[in-house]
Image 1 (cartoon, rainbow, N blue to C red):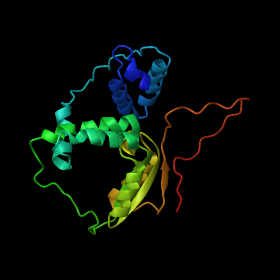
Image 2 (tube, rainbow, N blue to C red):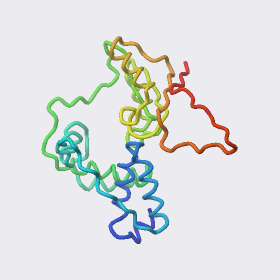
Image 3 (cartoon, one colour):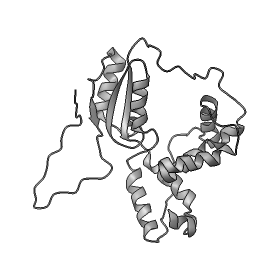
Length: 227
């Protein structure tokens, strides 16, 4: 990343590469394998080839930057002083490296955003609820850290944490049949996972290397539940 800041090869600037890495980490398949190839090319001084995405057979809704800002800026507290984001960038960089810089500036449009949600909820977060809240946290989530899922489960008045041992942003886009089964039981009849329950991702980011000597190993179960 330091080399990209000083000597970017063509269009692959430092900023573009940070954005590319953050976006590619969201979905394990096929994002991680393609990302690994691009980073390997950059490391070896080659300009990565990036083919355009195939056209979608279905009409896609408009997903411009202002669509995300309308949600982020209207629902969450953000500094109204544009100059405050420089300090936020440095603090975020210390905590989360290059990705921290990206996320700090992602909220910068909120400094001048003209609207605020009429019924934005600002707490308290520990009010008793009619039913126990099920919180699902992915251990290696690049956008919503697992530590924050644990903190949320502790802060809510009555919550149960289901740990998804896997990668990428949420178990919804990086599936685990184990998580889906628990979620279905929860929504249909209110059944909670056992305390300390842990699920595994169906497919890891990279295939495990085959053992030498012609000995094959069998796959384990998708769920690893500890109570």
